[in-house]
Length: 287
Image (cartoon, rainbow, N blue to C red):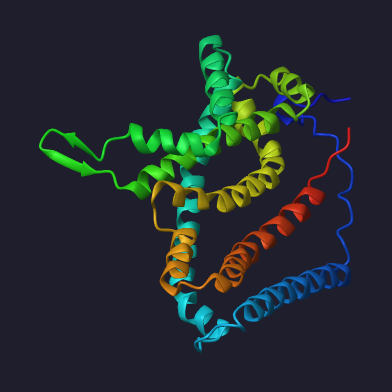
């Protein structure tokens, strides 16, 4: 039998099983519809409770719906700012986290140890503490010779949120690479691939699909955590909601306003969570 050239030998593929069957479309539709009914019902209930509390007012007041419609554009604009902060923080955290995750598997022990320490430190630190730390550590402006670069509060808030994201992305990258069987490295080495070729051409393409679901889940968590920037004085949706309540001066509006803000975040994060679950089922692997 004629022997095959060495370069034609295939690298062992990761043992896989057929992806789990996705939930039937009808079941998914029923679940989503039921959840939407519950949320809308809860919002209507909150408005009803608030209307009952304001029924005894001595002076006529605008209806709760009118007040909500009045302030919805302003609060919606603040919510879009939260989304922008989450996207920017996720982008910075992902880029730095990938480098930190690759550093943890580096053959150089000093690089691996430093990367491991940074990952554990920022991953196990409270997000709000890191946010305060960056807000007070970074100056208001940087002077580079004759050039002065301002550092606004929103930029420092993005950096503060990017630090824990960086650490969690580093763990996602490290875990994704480690999830690939070691036989992949051995079989590639037997074909005279370099370590760099093995990592970028064989291991990472397989691990990338497994990294996407936890990465998306991390983004949803980050989006909900962006309300922390209101604590450091940045005008996001939470700050604007408080300002609207103070301007109206009505205690009966607290429940409807915060319910409306809750629904905004839920409407944005829930589709991400459902897509994450679908991707997890598709890339499920059993060894």
